[in-house]
Image 1: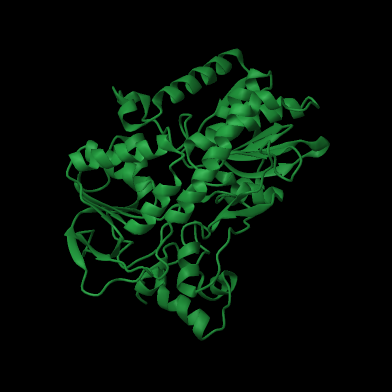
Image 2: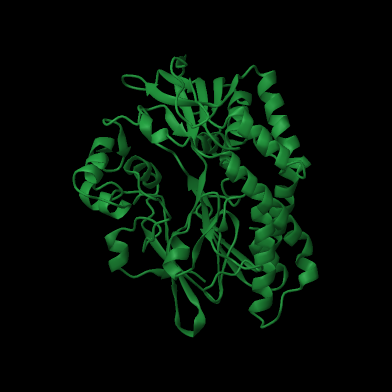
Length: 455
């Protein structure tokens, strides 16, 4: 949105191809207008920033400089003759109505998806991702399936999720963060130059304290229990190496578990175009960009989480820089460096912040040891951990591709987007972003048929 508005401010015609019903992405996910939410702002922060951005978008929708194509899922971007691009998308409730959009340049703002590592019981009904719980609350105005929730994993997302669920009426039995007190204190000391971010975290902590939500650091959910659905979780303390401390297991009754272990940039479209994917530090990845958010493929820009996870404020700054760059470069001009100075300063500050966050919130080093042989690690193909371990120990697999070919792990609907980090951990293989020809499943009828072209 930020890039589209900034480019349109300079007279560029923009087609905003959006997978959501309404603009705003995951951070500003909005409930359906027909539901009549009277105060949606209580589920968000930085609401005034959102209002200003929405007003600017609305003005350009009215003057025709921006066309918003909602509920369109882009599955491929290809280069066309004359240096342009063709964007292939699917629309409709079944994502089976094809459409193409042509442009002189492309900005990839594909965001990120959640990293969830397997553990015994993680496939039980009632277990959702942390971001999924937040999406249900913001977009559906509903709580996760259950009234008593545990929020667990690692990362800064857990606190707003727990606070949001508690404010919406759920009983949050505990927030379980695997990062220990020492690591959190180390991170806080290095974030002294980011008082606004520290204050934001303090506000969430205060909200949890007011509602009586226990917060346990240096702990992890080691198992979820239930017959037909989630009934309880076992939580245990971790030692400095990330292993479970003997005798610390404690059972907590709950019927909802929101769990997450960070975010992974969505780089499929960038990879399909041949953009370079690079490490951003501390195990993070993203599309490599320069100071203008340009990739190494001419006329392709990237902004937001796809170029490295760092949060909504960083995404807005990168979008503004990219929009200014696109508007200038399409006219053969150099971008106005002074006009980008504020956004560039914000970007530098928040990228430094993100590097510290990446270093603080890392999954426990020995989490895979807690995954039992009968635990399903690839949900699409129902591949248990025993099959993955057998592929390595007995059949000679040395990497994720070998494990995939021998077990079918990663061959299902998600194509490894959900399971690949977990399978890699269980197999003891290195993980890096995969290169997929298509960014999402596409019906064969769409590949074989003609596509309608958008203006």
